[in-house]
Amino acid sequence: MPARIIVHLEPAGGRPPVPPPHTGPAVNAAFLAALRDFGESDLSSALHETRPPKPFALTPLLDEQDRRAGASSERVRFEIGVLVDSLTAPILQALAATENVRVARCLYRVASVGIGRAEAFPDLAAGARPADRWALRIATPVAFFTAREEGARRVRPFPEPEWVLADLYRKWTAFAPDAPLDEATSQAITQNIEIADYRLTMTEHLLKANVPPVRGSVGKVVYRVADTRRSSPEALASLDTLVRFSAYAGIGDRTTIGMGHVLPQTR
Image 1 (cartoon, rainbow, N blue to C red):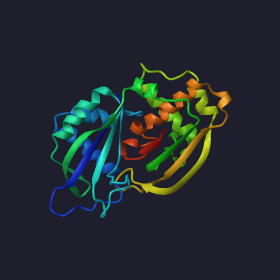
Image 2 (cartoon, rainbow, N blue to C red):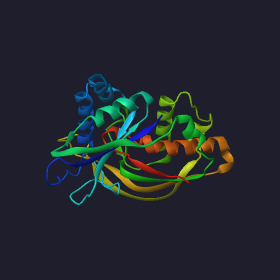
Image 3 (cartoon, rainbow, N blue to C red):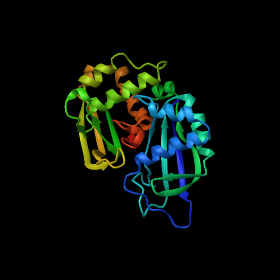
Image 4 (cartoon, helix red, strand yellow):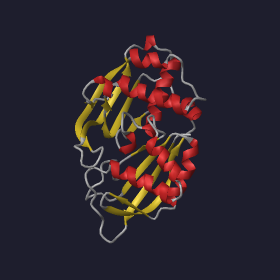
């Protein structure tokens, strides 16, 4: 059952700390440390070492408007998208038992921990509709990284629909084997989706300390079916399922260190 865990933070001291502009790696480190401190060292190591697709996604520190937390932020939080049922309880328990978290140079008190939303995979699929248009609000930078065998390592910052949906399809297949999507979904992804509109800007995201940040896209993108006659209603409903799933899984690469946090705007 995909779940979205929300961790609200408050200043641990009297004066609110001012977080650095890039907190993705620091939130990842704080999250894994909370698991270790709770006695879940094996789980912490497994989440760190597991090769993609990983069963979770993290945001950086966010404010009340889903922007990077900064000096003017009234509320600060981070979120965890959990993609495997068995992980939800130990993650919730570990975070609920955590009094303080250090994110980079900032010390926060854990004010509350709870599930913002959760849906079983079959329920996600059952609630889908045969849509032909989807809008995504990309809150933290999205990008795709080339593999070593593809020459010089490059960053592809544009959320091409085929890349976004194919990656979501791969994650769904990995974590929801008992809720298969329509068999024509893959073909629809590669042959029948296009960009309808976008309002995107480029911004930086830190992947690792002491390494130059990479660039990705934030903003809004709209996808549509190029020819509805070429895809069945069942395949279109499966595409809608994947868009809804993106609220838990994120989109693009490096979602475990804060990239690709997305808010799908579905009707």
